[in-house]
Image (cartoon, rainbow, N blue to C red; front, side, top):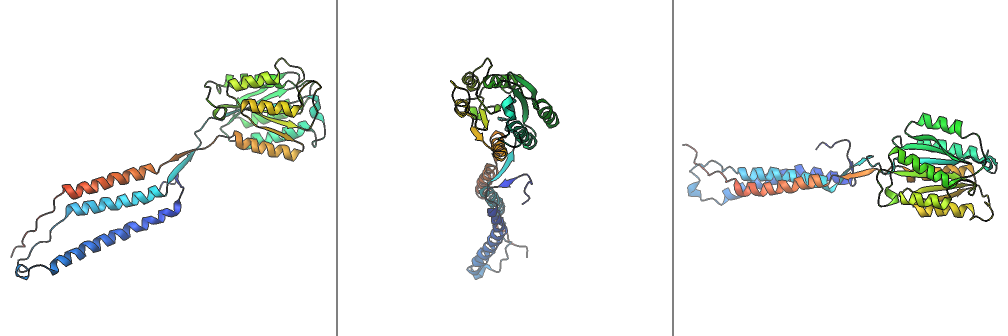
Length: 326
């Protein structure tokens, strides 16, 4: 039986069961002939002189053929064929908001916090599935959309290299979330509000090293905006700055944003840690492949064939034995 190349199998070893089909066919033929010889053995010798044509059994033949095909279909169904597709678009747009405040020039992460963040972001952009749209937001004293969501990796890498090289004063975390939401909304990713953040069409990945400084939207307000839109915010803290007196510590602020929106918080202390976190985030943010099960197709076909086999036995009469002409 020829199998489509695009199918995969949950239990491919069960396909060896297809060798049973010709074996069963041979056994059925052998049993039929043995039954005929047995009938002849006990026939009345006085009638043996009247040569008879063998009775034809069209119903049995049709039923046997249908049963054999049904057996093959049942084996295929047991192997559970399926197809993996990438039609799921629930995670297809990501806004990457990166801190470019002056503190990102610190060298506790080699060579600097900003350079390490840029390198990790570059790897993320290069390895993300090609059909995912990515947008860029720079965050310092203001939050600005550097690149609208796009699948053009060259455009994104150019913007990352040229627009994230200079630092400025300020860290407007809440504004960065608000600006990212506006970019997602403009891209159409928020046209439908899902029931759960896990099913959101848009995601925000926020990278920063400190607490809120300046801005018109507080981090908690930005988190509430994202939560209302069912947009999870994944937050990454670089370094271990203590933050600003009178405010919650940066890890507390960022973990609260992630918790409120259904995202994930991570803190990194080295460039290697940062790259690992980006890799983990990439797996979380990437589209989940959709699995289509096809076992029901051969199973249904087998059931129909078995019903037809029973109908053939009941509905097609056997041909009457007729004497051979002398």
